[in-house]
Image 1: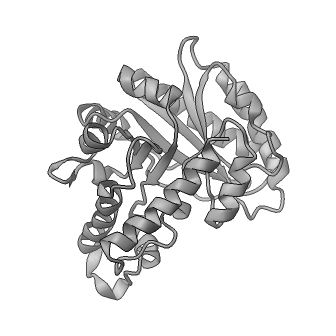
Image 2: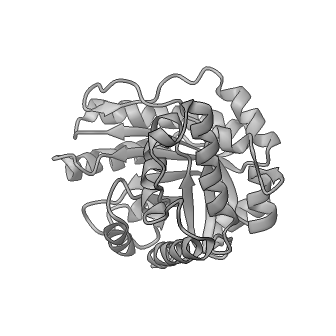
Length: 295
């Protein structure tokens, strides 16, 4: 594990930009960016356009390691270049932004009010490629829809099992058991989730740490116990569909948590904007999210 990157994540300021939209969400991200499905033909052109959007964000003068601690990349982004360098190397070498890689292959069908991750048979090979590409850590997402103990335990147990596999490869896992913000049992689900996480942290070897990416909770300070846990490097928050202002407001009340926003980060950015307009909008977005992460 890269010690300089580890030290930056542990002590640095800022938030983690989630730039990891995959095939299932790329079209939606492009539409929000002002590019309709009729503007491209097939997945190849779609991925070219989404990489162009990500590259525009990463090369912006507003995007740097002073306020952006890390960035989560999609596999195809890791395999491409930004400004003539491999994407992860560009982020670290030019911006001092710590690179992470999304490694999950999507969600299984809902069972017991939750969706675990689909199998990842090629994970070891992907982790080897991530190490070769100078990636620091990984991120993988499950979803919790309801306060069902069996479903939540299945999500968290799977996340930690794969997390230990990732740790064994020398990478830092971000474990993301998202609680759906629209769940009518959200607070109850969060209580069950926290208990399952604490139980699973006992299975992490002494001297090792993981990261957590969690939905902004209903109760302020609810995850304080996890923020200070010796086996947790950092707790980051997903915006989960909240508008940016509401996400920032909720985050500002969670002391010790930092943002890892996707939609809330890119809100207001548009392909038709001039570079000055784009950079100005991104600068305001980054500034607000970084301020909310500093509380």
